[in-house]
Length: 130
Length: 325
Image (tube, rainbow over all chains, first blue to last red):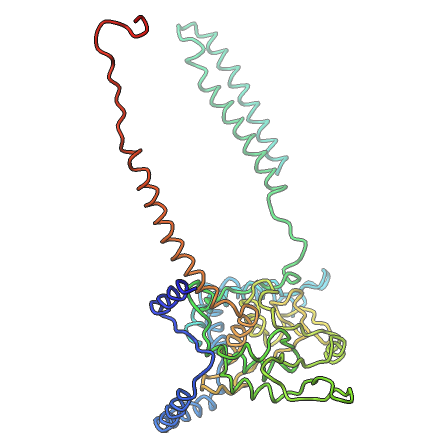
């Protein structure tokens, strides 16, 4: 066990990620509180800024980044064929041109468009999320 | 297609035969010294190309008949396959983002827990992962659990302890079905492992509700359209909306942010050992590499006298042969 522990200690020292403590010692908590307090002190300025940001966001009614990026992607050149097909299908179904045939839905076209938009938006979305 | 290729091939064969006949006639009529070999390449070429055409044609026909994959289900029944997202914690040398886990637990408690249980997670497992001991104790004490029978055999209620499991929203599955229009909200403890696509699927499902179903799609009563759910009709309505939850760390609570956090938390609840497992994997790699190198060295060391020895044979000098002696 000793060998293993020493290995793991060595390893923990060498690895960039941190060890997560199960129990926070009291002293540290106090320190944390202090830190929190000091943070609070320091945050006053930040809080105002944040509030200002929040107000702006509230005014704009926070847009979900996923929806934003997907809208952009749907308009992009890469998804133009899928969008075209989808819109054509919607027109066809809503126009009721093929009333004789079996009823049609645009689920498949919607899938293709959504797949294209998601594929394009995924990396941008992850870059914007925390 | 078969008929066409067959026709073409018979025509080609006919042409080839004509060519061959003509060629032989020509060879016979022209009484030159050139043999049949000299004039036959044309005929051979024709025959060869005809055979190739037949072969290619039959292969095309076969592939046309049996090549394409058959699908028993329509795309709508299959559901839209989720997009692969670049999750940080899935990379092989990364851990969970524990701040995200904490936010995800908050989302679970404030949003999901009203319908979904998380029956395999006791409060003690949250300690050191998302919360400190004291926070976890406070959360556990907010719930009541059955205590041991007292002197009169009555079972009283007691406040929760760290060893208690997260309370379920319904008493049993039947109660859950009755409250949800017949649909059972699944337990979320292992949901990431239990669904194809795992994290990607659940994230897509939570954020993928379109504003309105596409034209012509039939959505039965009591169901909602979600492209990612197989069959597209899901009993769960969209639950995550912007700013539904107020994060204590001030992260803007957009729909996708909440979905991302709660999915990471659910992945933790399905694989709480992941951080430890990756660390152990790293140790295994390092130690076994060292041991392997050592074993290679030992082998070379032990074999070096055998590998470097030189065998020589000096034939006995003199005219006499051995054996005659």
